[in-house]
Length: 271
Image (cartoon, rainbow, N blue to C red; front, side, top):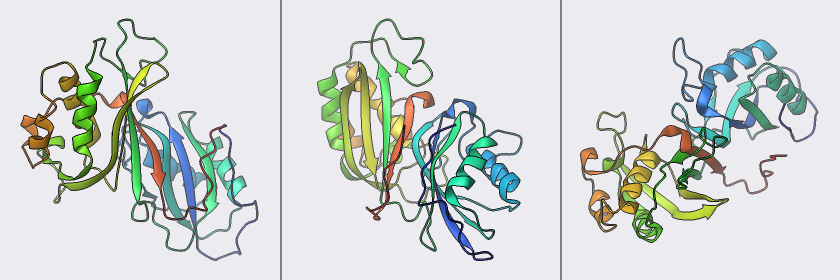
């Protein structure tokens, strides 16, 4: 069971609706994404079932990022409104006891009334991991994309620099989509070596479906010399999806962090 911290272990007054904030981690390999789907194991479905078992209440969750099937979360944030009083730390331990090992509530706290995990988030951070070594580690294959190819990281860095700012990301999301607006503001986008792996860190106000994975796939093509870095400028002007590169595998992607304006909220505990 993961470590849990909350704002004390005192239950709110009875019969008063309380909004709780849940900071989660999960291995996305065993889930068909966040959103509930009939007959499939999803993070949202597992959590709502756990809440029903522990509290007796059927409640919908708000969530900062709806991850796709196979995508992991180092930090995901959800919110839920409950009527029955519950001490945060005891509630977190009870929920962890009835959820699978691939999912852990790392911190649970009482949020301000009206807290919405999605609308209140100001920045979402994703990180994608590549293993470029010729012999891939069998212990990492669930969490990295093994490309086994020398990449021109300088060219990839040049392409990443063009992604920063506000652009039309139509080329980096499926053609058939529920999205209506395709402009997003990317705050940071950079490649770096982390523990022998090549990692892309990217943050934005919000993301389109498959946006990060499509950007990664396109930049890997740049690194292999199949595209010039300068092509990124054209792609970011609303080019069609077919003009960009492949969609990188889901298992190399992590929802890394969620930022909120309440700077006083404790950081994620990973110990």
